[in-house]
Length: 258
Image 1: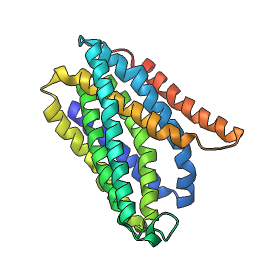
Image 2 (image 1 turned 180 degrees about the horizontal axis):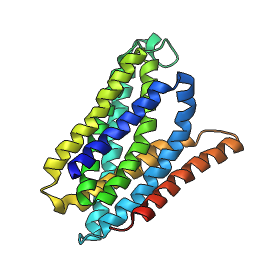
Image 3 (image 1 turned 90 degrees about the vertical axis):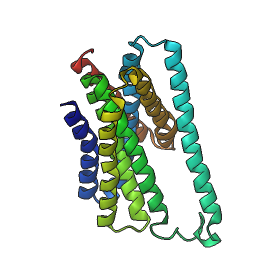
């Protein structure tokens, strides 16, 4: 049953994202992304601080080791993103002047392939995180899956918009989104067979998962929310953020302690 839960949880986010992208127009997608980003930030931050980290620190592992793992995880995700930024900067420098920012748009599909590759790797890692969470505890697996799905839906919709802007036909963009989503299922299955025998590593894996949630929330999602806006828009944004935190708190309370 654990493997079934893992496959179902890793596949659900991709299916929901695909259904949302297929049913909404480009204009509607662009309007929804900002709200879903705020909701996702609340869910990710709440899950990391209210559920995953408390679960990891309930183990018999030395807290200093777990804090060191948290620090290493944050630095790893920072360096990973830094490498991507440097790669993109080098790529833009190699473009002819008319294709650089401020000139003609980049040729169709050129930026889209990077999005597909990066999204596939990210989804594969999400699958491993979900697998480790379910192997640690079914309740924790459910909450972690909800957090990842809440993050995955706006991310996948945003990637879909990027692919459309890069010149991909709508059907091709949906197809590539589906393939990248399948990487999460692959990561979940591999994680089930590889991570399972090493249960002693679960607290560390959970802390790494929490570090990814904290980093994505504070380094990626929160800066997107700090653009100039009216008071009414700011209140709506805070409402979506609070809704994400409340959803996690309710899920943790309803599912109960381990």
